[in-house]
Length: 444
Image (cartoon, rainbow, N blue to C red; front, side):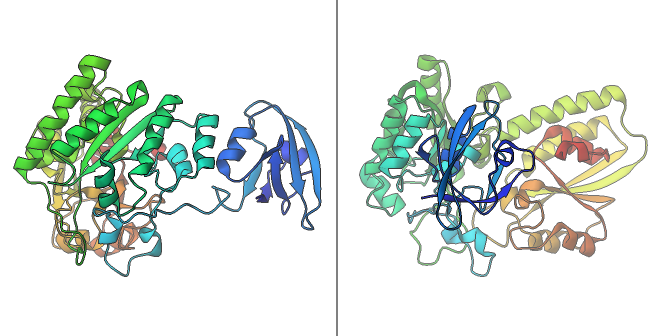
């Protein structure tokens, strides 16, 4: 296999060596280049021999000397230099299977790509890894690898993931751990299925992986109203969430006592469901599982409090200002208490926090990241929003341009007649946005 070179950066090492767009990169120092991981790994040397093929298939050798870790200056048709690997599983809890018809096509793609696990922190199931990919991860010491484990009971994993190979693929965990590859694990917990005794088994098995297991995130299953003909699942109640929290925290104490690190954590959703206070930042150590919503609110609260102290020392704005901020129903009580600290210190700023009910997905979906533009429009249409509407940036796709239902911030601005300002999950930026300070520097 070889990869087509789409662009050569002017003045870069490859350009100076005569490599041209439209040619094909076959190998670096004799190592076949199949995708971005091969390329990034082998281009780091200071002395390289590239095997290049022209449009007619004629190969030539190009010798390059450059700084170690200096980029060759090549661009390819896609970032991965290959097609993205899709998921072959049929998980009983899969959120994508619970999407309604008619949404944009990209939302229905199920990713299960080990390269994206390393490059962007995506979680993989291990079920579609070839022996070549496993050996390459170990050889290149690609680390950490983020794995959606869910359960270490082989039979139950096959059932939960709808894949007869799901149980056998668990053996890769020990191979990686023994090779020194760091692992982060994710458990999507479904009441009565992989919690309780099964969760105890899973956590004990993961504990046996040793020091290379960095962290475990326990996340409650998310259920929408679009579950016709899907596996019957029940949401967590306040009582069952509390029971599961106690179990997770007990294992965390065991890890802490025996390894000096808590390792296993429940996501913020579990605490909100159980009506429990969010732990303090030190509980989460280095916040290893923020992308799974573990400690996200605790980190936000700490940042906001620090920013509030700085603002108080410098003096709050004297000009009166009114803004509205939206969030999901789940985090509303927590965030409103956090904003009460601002309200108690500054009487010139009025910030109204509005919990938006998720009518689009229904069910038990109450996180801000799954809110749609149409629900915001419907539930805020008769409100006095003040000077500006602040929305969590997680409501928008990565490019920051559209909601899940393809409405845009511009659509909301047109309907409401006020600017719509996306705000990252950052306490300083949130306070700056509320106070009307310029936050553009934080997006650079």
